[in-house]
Amino acid sequence: MAMTSLHDLFVHHMKDMYYAEKKLTKALPKMAQKAGDQRLRSAFEEHLKQTEEHVKRLEQVFQQIGEKASSSTCEAIDGIVKEGEELMSEAKQGEAMDAGLIAAAQAAEHYEIARYGTLASWAKMLDMPEAEKILHKTLEEEKKTDEKLSKLAMEQVNRKAA
Ligand SMILES: [Fe+2]
Image 1 (cartoon, rainbow, N blue to C red):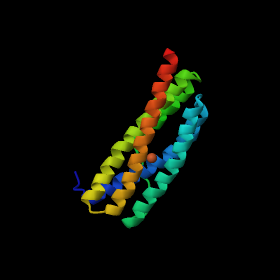
Image 2: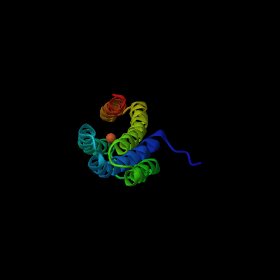
Image 3: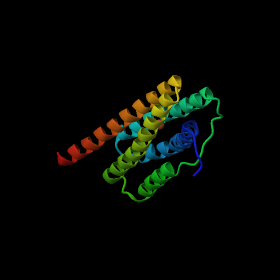
Image 4: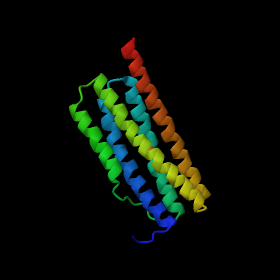
């Protein structure tokens, strides 16, 4: 195995997230369109705006470290998005579709939370406080989105029980 520095790992994961965020900007409009519940649809639309902002923030970090913003294929997000697409082609519109969309979106959020958490701590270790701050801001937004999705899932369960 080649000896990769922490800085190299950081850059690699930045490219991976740049790919992932851009991929999600394409997936989210389709998810919003398939959502039956109005609040779920707005949650996806709102998160699309945030995701576009996340792409810009990554570009800021690239600029700070003197790297050109570029993507490297992230197989994890490809897999999560592909699974979501399969679900959208198979699930019945309505309750099952919405539950599946929430599950797919949370899988993406959890992946992003893991990655941004790592990137933020690596930025700290590499003594890049500005990058750390930016990455942390996105991390917090991903966490909030995840919480919102959990809430919508619970409301769906409660509605069903009522
Ligand atoms: Fe994001």
